[in-house]
Length: 174
Image (cartoon, rainbow, N blue to C red; front, side, top):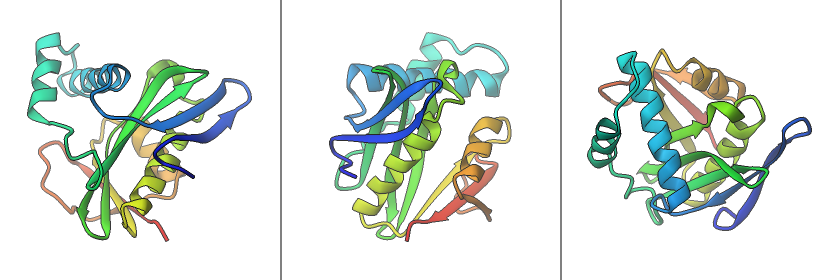
C-alpha cells in the first residue's frame, strides 16, 4: 500500500467506498476534520458544545507538526469522495508509533471508515520503521475503544501520563 498517495481502505457495500490518502494536516479538508475532532472530544469531556474559541485554543495548544515525515504521517479518509475521517501517527521512539487525532464523522460511523484509517495509519507506521503502535484514549470515547479492540489492539498499562488518558492500547505491527 502506498501511504503517500491513494490507498483504498475497507469497502462497505451499503455505504460506498472509503479512500484514505496521505495529506498534510493543514490542508482545508484536514483542518476542518481536526476542528470537528476537537469540537467532539472537548464537547464530550465538558458535557456541552465546545465554542469556536475553545477549538481554536485546542488546536494551538496541541500542534500537529510532528505528523509529517520523517517523524509522522497524517491521513484523510473520504467516503464517496467527501472528507469524513482523519488520523495521524507519529514516532515515540525508533520502534514505537502512536496513533493520534483518529476521527470519523458521526454521519459516517459504522461504514468502515475507522478500519480504513487504521489500515492506512498502520502502514504509515511500518514505513516509518515502527514495530508496534500505541494510543491512549478516554473512557467516554466508547466508539473509539470498540474500534481499537475490533482491530486487534489490546489494553496495556499506561505508557504516558497524558492529562486525559484513561485507557492505553497497543498492537504489534509485524
